[in-house]
Image (cartoon, rainbow, N blue to C red; front, side, top):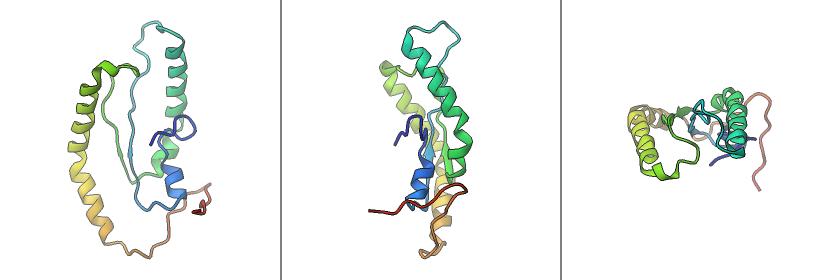
Length: 128
């Protein structure tokens, strides 16, 4: 899920809800090609990208694994390149599969009774 600005990659809310395993996928692209903005949304997008990058350390601490497909070179609204972007994601996941498998296997040895991981500065959110 995409948490936009408040939680660019919502790993911390997932932990706070009790998730024991969190695999984060971050589409870290450049919102600026160095050229002049095409329109107002390019300016707003660059502001969001900067704000999201500033919060990256926070959400990365709450993730067990982080996968970042290389989407540089694509505009944020490059919907005409959807097949290429999907391929970027597939390639990144295939490259990460050995790490993911090792992570999942190591988690099987952890007992089911362990308490949820609580991060500094957070409080558990009760399930309703």
